[in-house]
Image (cartoon, rainbow, N blue to C red):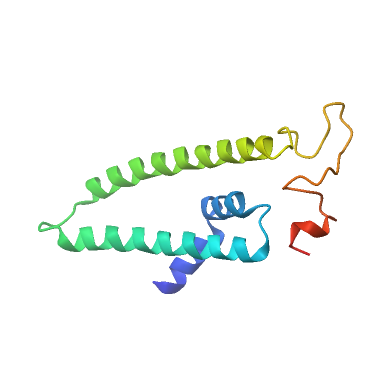
Length: 126
């Protein structure tokens, strides 16, 4: 079970995109703290669901589980859309203008925005 959980978290596109969106542009310490907080929140959520299943007085049928799974998939999708909107808003608010490091005339810029260029030493990932 533990190995399956680790594989799920490491390979889940929703997990990777959430942590990447939230930590992008932060220094290593801030990104690490954010990742630890996200991981603890994820664990707490799983424990709450686990305890709710244990507390259920009746056996839970497969149809109920599938119904909950479908609705939770919708919730995750909406949260991912929200994270994408946040990333766009954050890039615009930090002066990128939402152009991903490119000027409106199509020429690349390296203006020291939060997301910076790959060779920017201020990114903190080099």
